[in-house]
Length: 99
Image 1 (cartoon, rainbow, N blue to C red):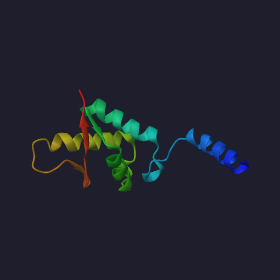
Image 2 (spheres, helix red, strand yellow):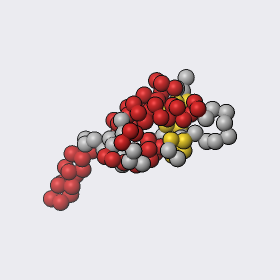
Image 3 (cartoon, helix red, strand yellow):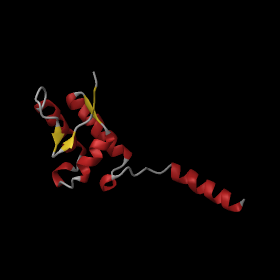
Image 4 (cartoon, helix red, strand yellow):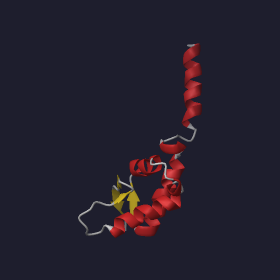
């Protein structure tokens, strides 16, 4: 019973922590910043996995939320109507448009 109480306390404590969602130690807040920036700039919201993959490329110019948002917006507007799928350095851009 004592172990259960300890584990319960630790799990409750950890639930309040900022969760690391992957690439380069990016937080949930960082992913939200990128999504908000792209939504404002070009009415598009990229999937978190796409943002994580872009971060995982390790390109120094693509580590800030605003830089990733700019790259994503450029990719989806540049490739609009083209046969090539929109991508940033080979990472396929997936997400959805907003009004």
